[in-house]
Amino acid sequence: MAFLLERAREPTHRVAAFRTAAAVVDTLGPEELDRRIRTRTLTDLRGIGPKTGAAIVQAHAGEVPEYLARLEESHGELVPLADDVAEFRALLRGDLHVHSDWSDGGSPIREMAEAAIGLGHEYVALTDHSPRLTVANGLSAERLERQLDVVAALNEELAPFRILTGIECDINVDGSLDQTDELLGRLDVVVASVHSDLRADSTAMTERMLTAVADPHTDVLGHCTGRLLVPREQREGRRQRPRPESTFDAEAVFSACVEHGTAVEINSRPERLDPPLRLLNLAVDLGCEFAVDTDAHAPGQLDWQGNGCERAVECGVPPERVVNTRTAEDLLAWTAG
Ligand SMILES: [Zn+2]
Ligand SMILES: [Zn+2]
Image (cartoon, rainbow, N blue to C red; front, side):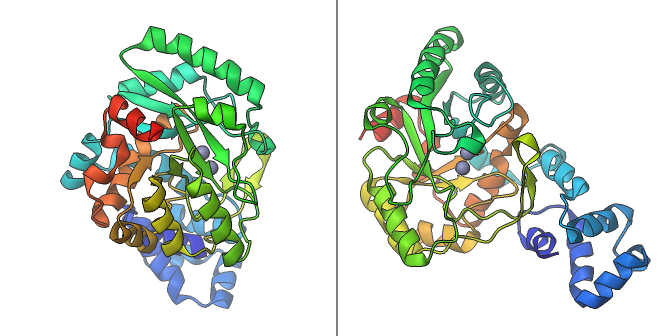
């Protein structure tokens, strides 16, 4: 039940029914919770209805709570953003972390771009996965080369909108990046993320992240803790269980981000919401720059930036320190620098 509670405690979580249900579950001991699930008497408790009750049962069985997932997918449209969050979001000109069906996204590049245009974006960075992430159909150097040609052709058609070329590049265990130097140098935006050995000890993880952040190709440090708040379905029926944050010396890593001009991503995916607020506050205090990204794998997910903006506002992120408030021209000058 931990993730239900964690979600409900997230200040961004706007679904009051879940907050109430989670609070009720919180008062039950594990045995009482088991008994109530077994005897189907959860809904006898005040504050737990049929839908929240079903979600609790599913979560208890380690299943994806469908109702919660649906709420997460739709609540951005259902619940208007607070005025200050809406203002912050209106400052964003694009999104620097977007996947297509070339890796593990569900839609062609063109559909992602058209959805971004529909949201009023001026640009998106197409950041499909790197070769090592085979479970996500990561792009070999050859496939990435081909993608660059496809993007160039689409850009002719979609101008003035711009698809920035990019990659979500795995950070190898030794901190190096999982693509050739030559190709990384040709891309507009490089998001570097840890996707493996997430449970490494803090010293090893810190070293690994420091090396990646200092790499001259790295522009954005993706979802820095790797946490997953809810289980999720992946390609080919794979399921990922919730997982805690990786442990690393956040002060050292964020300081290195400041030193090397690497932006810290504020990942807006509902199951990530990474970094956690305490680390986001730390990054603000240390003077980091940020990218508020969706990590969208489908067109509708491009609308998730409100999640990240809400957290940015909550932690007092100055908009001028958010690199995707900049024009494409200014952004490219920054990534090239
Ligand atoms: Zn990732
Ligand atoms: Zn991603």
